[in-house]
Every structure is written in C-alpha cells, then in structure tokens.
Image 1 (tube, rainbow, N blue to C red):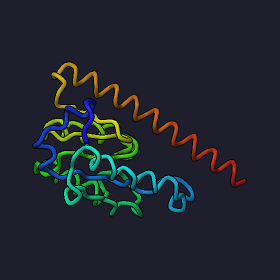
Image 2 (cartoon, rainbow, N blue to C red):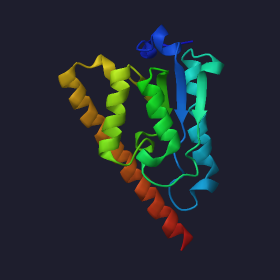
Image 3 (tube, helix red, strand yellow):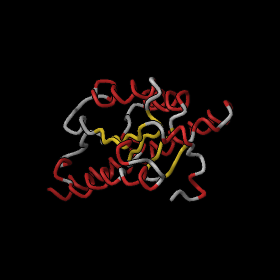
Amino acid sequence: MIDEQKSCIQPHHRSCLAIVYIPPAIGPGAPSDHRQLHHEYAQEEHPWRWGWQQDMVTVLDEDLDWTGPAADRPGFQRLGRMIAEGCVGLVCVAALCHLSRSRTMLLAFLQACRHAGTLVAVNGRLIDLARFPANDYTQRLYQLTAAYYRDLTHLFEEVDRLLEDSD
C-alpha cells in the first residue's frame, strides 16, 4: 500500500526497475560490519512497500568489494547507464554519501536522475528532483549536498570512533 507521502511515485516509475545500490565497504573492518550491511540490503523493502513488483526490484551490489572513486566502480557505471537509458524508476541508497564522495560526481548523478525522471530514495525518504522548477532545483541540490556532507562527516566520525576503540 502506498501512503499519501509517496504520491510522487507514478505508474511509469513502477514500470521501470527499482535499483537498490549497495556501495563499497568503507572504513576499517567494514566488510564485517553486519549491521551496516544488513541496513544497506534492507533498503530493498522500500520499493516493495511502495508498489514495485518483486521482479522489478534489483539489488546492485557488485561494488561491495571495490575501492576507488565512484567513476571507476563498475556497478555505479552500470547504474548510470541504466538511468540514462530510462530503465530505472527509483534508486534506493541507505545514505546519499554512498553514491559518491565527490561532490561533482554526486551532482552529476542527481542531474542524470532529474533528467531521466528517476526518483531517489535515501533511507526510505523519497526525493523527486523532477518536480522542482529549475531555480528551485539548484537550491534543492545544494540542500542535498549539504545533507551529503553531514552524512560524510558522520561517517568519518564513526570511523574515528572505530579506530579509537581498536587501540
């Protein structure tokens, strides 16, 4: 069942794939952080709750063991191609910073989503960039990147705590 908050999801979105993007493991010991990994995979539940058929929800986790910038990640590249081809109605991530640590790459990704009419869900919160007029869109991107940097700062603080705990 779709609640009123999810009214930005249109039938054409559900006729396309919902992609749950699992980012590379980040930080020391990250592959063994089962809670975080479980949280990443749990993003798959959102599209089902919002009306996507099970066979239209795909988990893209081929970058899980990858290192390096987003532009070099095969899964991230594939996701970008699929968005450009109009095959993706929704991209789900646990945190915006999981798409890219590069502000330029993140903005380019969000621009591609806006152009294709692809929705983005961050930890179950839908973002429909296409509904903003051009001038509001720019302001919204700045808000999203501010949230991105808060997420990234939180991530680095968490890594610091893990390092301190391991000493």
